Image (tube, rainbow, N blue to C red; front, side):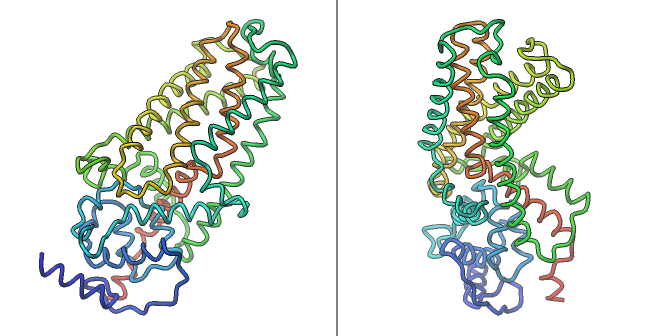
Length: 397
C-alpha cells in the first residue's frame, strides 16, 4: 500500500499516469468543475483501483490527458453509483480528497446547460426544480379548467365517459403536438452537438457497438456497482434499489407512451374512438405503465432524500425532484382519471391530468430527462471506442 501511494504521488507530481509516459499539458480553458474532474482523473489514472467498477475508468485509462470534450464525455458516462467513492483510499479525509461522483455530477449539469438548444434556454436547467414544475403544472391545469368552465361545469360526467366531449380530439392534438415535437427537436439538436464534440476521429458506429450501447442503457448495467451487488446509497451497503426503481419508472413511461401510440393508431387507422374497454391494449398498457411509474418514482424520491451527501447530487437535486414529481403526478392523475370515468369528477381530473402532462413535456428538454439522452450518447461512444486499439498502449509500445 505504501509503495502504491508513493507511486501515485510521484505520478501526480509529474502529471503522468502510473506506468505511462510523460505528458505535455496543454493550455485548457476549463470551468472550475471541469478542472476538478481533470485533477481527479489524473490521480485515478495513476491508481486504477476502480478500473473494473464501470465504463468511466477503462475509458479514462485510454487517455494521458483530459480535454474539455473528454471531461464532458466521462461525466455523462458516469452513472453516479457511488461505488468508487466508497472504495477510494484517496477520498476525504485524505489530502487528495478524491470524489469522482461529486465531480462528475457538477460537470453533467454544466453539460446540459452548455448543449441546450436554443442556447438561451440553457439556464432553465438550473431553475427547473420542484417549485417550477408544480407551478407550471398548476398553471396549465387552471387554464384548462377555465376553458372547461366556458362550456359548462367542472363537476359533470360527459356522456359515456367520453372526455373528447370536453376537449375535442383535434384540439388536444393541437395543444400537445407542438410541445412534444419541440421537446424532441431541442433534445436532438443538443445531443447532436454533444456527439460532434466528444467523438472526433472515433469512427462510425457498427451494429455491434450500437447493440452493445443499447444493451448497457436498457439494462442500466453500470448501476450494478461493477460487481452486480448494486450502488451505494445512504451508506456503504450495496443495493440494487436505484436500478430497479429506474427500470420501473422508465419502462412504465414507455408503456404509457405505447398506450398513447396504440390509441392514436386506433383513432386514425381503424376509426375506433375512445374511451376503450379495460381489456383493450391502450388500457392494459396504460394501467400497467401507470402502476410501474408510481412504484418507480416513489422509490426514486425516497432514495433521493436519503442519498449520501458526498455523492454530489445537491447540484441537480431540484431538477431530479421536479422531474420525479411530474412523472408521479402524470401516473397518479392518469389512473385517477381512468377510475373516475362516468363520474362528475371526470372533467376536473381531465384538466389536472392534461396540465401535468403538458408541464412534463414543456420542461423535458431542460430537465432531468436529458440525462438519459446524453448518457446513451456517452455509452455509444464507449462502445465504439473500446473496439478500437488503445492509443495509450500503442504509444507506450
